[in-house]
Image (cartoon, rainbow, N blue to C red; front, side, top):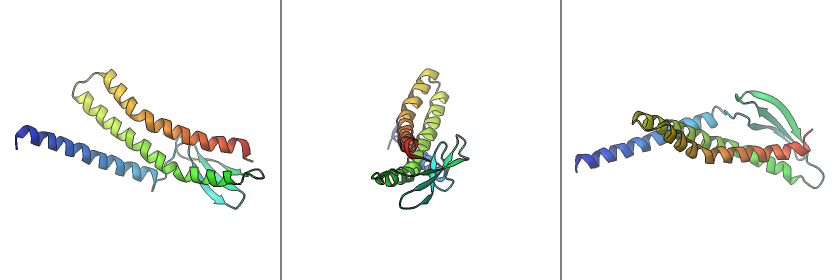
Length: 149
């Protein structure tokens, strides 16, 4: 094998290794640490009510709230529990792309690429999980907005 091919293989393995590390760190942040800025956690559930704990932008406990669905819309309580249980997956996806974006942005800056290009590529990389997380949080807030005590 030529030296150029070996260099490309090493570079590819470096990127794959970094993706594994970024995913592992993000998993640790989202699941064992439970860090979820502006997120929610189900504290207690009954047949007709759901008690949630909300978190502020720093991921610290903010306020508790109770959700009581209206008559005939008990299915919304199940939907709310499902949406809150999917939040760690959304944060995992979001944190992974943030870490990967910072890594690739840093490498591009070390390679003397322009700031505009780096910011544009990192922004394009992060926009999809950011929009997905924002939509998920807005769906939860929409359910809570109309039917909370």
